[in-house]
Amino acid sequence: EIVMTQSPATLSVSPGEGATLSCRASQSVSSNLAWYQQKPGQAPRLLIYGASTRATGIPARFSGSGSGTEFTLTISSLQSEDFAVYYCQQYNTWPPSTFGPGTKVDIK
Amino acid sequence: QVQLVQSGAEVKKPGASVKVSCKASGYTFTSYGISWVRQAPGQGLEWMGWINTYNGDTEYAQKFQGRVTMTTDTSTSTAYMELRSLRSDDTAVYFCVRSGLGGWFDPWGQGTLVTVSS
Image (cartoon, rainbow over all chains, first blue to last red; front, side, top):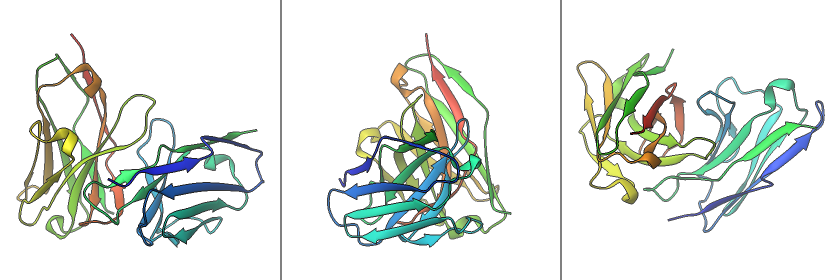
């Protein structure tokens, strides 16, 4: 089973600032990596798939990069609606599909 | 629009079973699989398994093997997840989500809270 790790666990950011979230896989997942955003009491929402492709309707301030074992989600200028928990997921070696433990982005 | 609508919250006693439904609309149901993912209170996301809605093939996470069954009713575009021998640590929100074989997950159902308590 591929183990996904994310850092940091919590990121405190002021509105308008940028944020960089990291995700690491225990072995290569090629570019088969997705990012999700989850707000309290809501279902996760797909942001990025294929490591760098934005899902339909996702603002351009969200961008993904990386391949192999190291991945990054960048939010260029945080808006109030971006404060949430972000999860990465690998779907390269499946089953099982595995998620990282999440990074909480909160208001500084 | 593509939408997955799940059944309502459940309260079960330890040892009981629960069956959660997930009705799909806005796309051809048999063109995509359905995964089930759960989230315990304050915790992360845990993949439980996947069903091929075209032929009924399933893949279950090892942790749930023997205790979970995923099925579909293609006549109503509905997927079901049944979990048996419930324990208190099965208390969680259960999500269905559209997914291809080995693909990303989108969209997600709204979630169904299952509470296991004596």
